[in-house]
Amino acid sequence: MMKIIYFLKRKTGISPAQFREHYENSHVLLAKKYIGHLLTDYVRNYPTFALLNPSNLKDDTPPSPYDIGYDCITEMFVSGPEAIAEITRIFNDPIVNPILVEDELKFLDRDATVMIMVDEVNTGTKVG
Image (tube, rainbow, N blue to C red):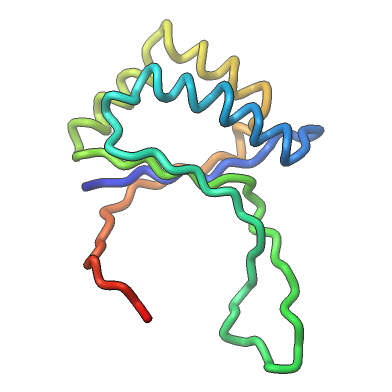
C-alpha cells in the first residue's frame, strides 16, 4: 500500500469555507472522475487546531494555536507504483491536465502545493 499526500493552501482572497466548498464539490469530483478507479481510499483532512512542539507545554500555560500554513491535507491511497505511474500519466494527459489546472486556479495557491509519496506502516495496534 502506498499513499500520496498533498498539502493544499487556499488562493488569496478565498475564505476557508469557500476553499472547502469548491474542493469538495468540484475538485474532488474531478479526481474521482479521472483517477477514482486507481484509488483504494481518498481522505481529506481540514486542520482545525495545531500546536508547535506540544511536548513543551507547561501545565499552567494554555496552548497557543500554530498556523501550519495549509488548509487541507489530502491522502490518496493506491495499491502500488503502477497506480502512481497511471495517475501521473492521467494528470499529464493533454486533455485532462488543462481541466484540472483550470479548476485549481479557482481556489488553490498552486505554487504552495506540496506532494509527498510515502510507504504507510500500520500495525493495526490501537494505542491506549
